[in-house]
Image 1 (spheres, rainbow, N blue to C red):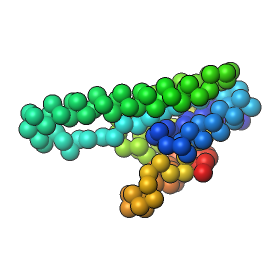
Image 2: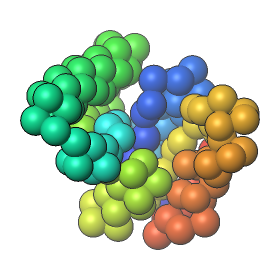
Image 3: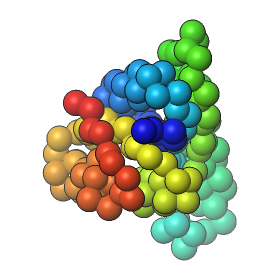
Image 4: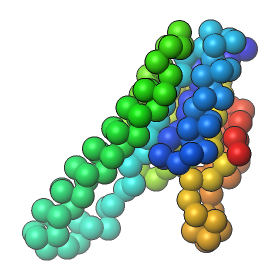
Amino acid sequence: MYKKILVPLDGSATAMMAAAQAIDIAEKYSAQVTLLHVCPNFNFMNEFSMHAAIDYTQLKEEFTVQGEKILADALAKFPDTQVNINKKLVWGYPSEEIIQEANEGGYDLIVTGSRGLSAIKGYLMGSVSNRVTKHAPCPVLVVR
């Protein structure tokens, strides 16, 4: 039934619960899991001076390190699993990148946390999980 499962991770507790649920499903169906972290896109910063460009490079490096840590921490939570777990870090807008990865990777299921943002920020911006649920090419399991 499920052969490829995509799990977006943002470092939140609900995202980790989603990862645990995905691993459980993958064990039952002998599926492969990909943990995906999307670093935020900062294209608007290109308009600033050379000093800002240096700060941008430093900021981008810090986000990359943070994203790699989120992925490594998630992998460390499942040391005894027999599931084939891959990790991937990309840059962009989270909902768009998750949907694109699901399309291009031929995933059968996306397992995501219900909300990684604060309630107010999520209300104003719209939740990533909500957008993914509406536009994903495959079923989406939202874990609370």
